[in-house]
Image (tube, rainbow, N blue to C red; front, side, top):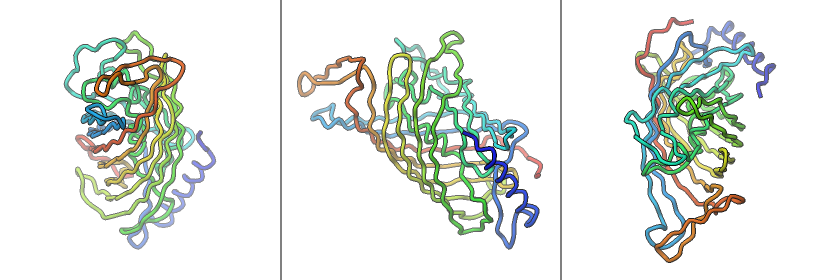
Length: 330
């Protein structure tokens, strides 16, 4: 929930420090986010290498999956009446080549397009409220050949795309820590094909502990940016329910990478992340067993989830601002 008093306190502190020091003192500066009058366009790429380890002998013992998702995002950053910033991110395009017909209850990946998630942050980047897209964790949108099932850790990635700042002046070489625990809700989803309403419930907790270091000043896409290195540890626990099935995840992992942040404009220009997760996943309604060593059989039970299966995945994430425009300094 939004803490209005804390947000107003941060606003007041930022204003006081900015007035006293003009945003900097002896090479140190205060960094924070700002609302943006128009829209920003980003390209987001997530390359996945995943290993399913069933612990069984033979060809079904270990399964490797490789996949890349490429998304074009439209972002609008508006100030709310509580002093927070609402970052509305719309998926304009995903995987630029159409997938063609689907089967059964599986939707086309392109049905994600046009949907918007809302993440509310304070001016220092701390997530105060997050309503994410149900599509990101649903089996129904992720069953193309070669994919690795419902990527619930994508929620963690989407919430890691903006660095958090401390309420203090920083200079090159300084380090700081951020710790978040986020209970995620679902954004309202558009009907599939304009007709079929989506029915999902999400009970997911994401915990992150991140160590940041201010590395240097660089020019990036026409902006004067600070380059920030980071290392993070995270934990994801929860379930996504559709109309009939629950998809469960419990896992930990670590991330590292760099951000390029433009202080004068108060926006993120670029991010690169290596994201490693060790998870156990299960789903309601299907239990896999083996008739023989190499012959699988699927049993179905709608009153309990399948045995949790270990997944290990490594994702390479790249976020880039597209067609940067000159923004008047405030």
